[in-house]
Length: 144
Image (cartoon, rainbow, N blue to C red; front, side, top):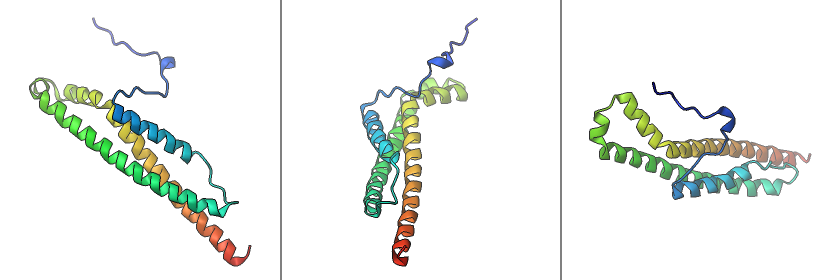
């Protein structure tokens, strides 16, 4: 009887293999954006807040573009594998064919999910920063 081969849990890391060069570039850019997102905004320097907000807007635009491209690549890959392997996939159970397609799309799925999460997080950070700028502006008006 065949046994499943499992990877020992201690061998798992937070790194995943990306073989597609376009996706590697997206992850590299996402790493840069992630590093920027990790830096705290300082209310002590109000001038830096607007600069940071402008940078966040640029990153949001870039994340939107990368996410749209990654989603498009994923849909294209999904339709291609379905079209190119239609006969083989039709001869399989639906759950098996879905798993094969899902495994094939793993890199694209990971990329889309990462970019979407980053977009949502950066959008929230941007909204919070706008609130902080409004707070500083109100303090300056009141002379505090």
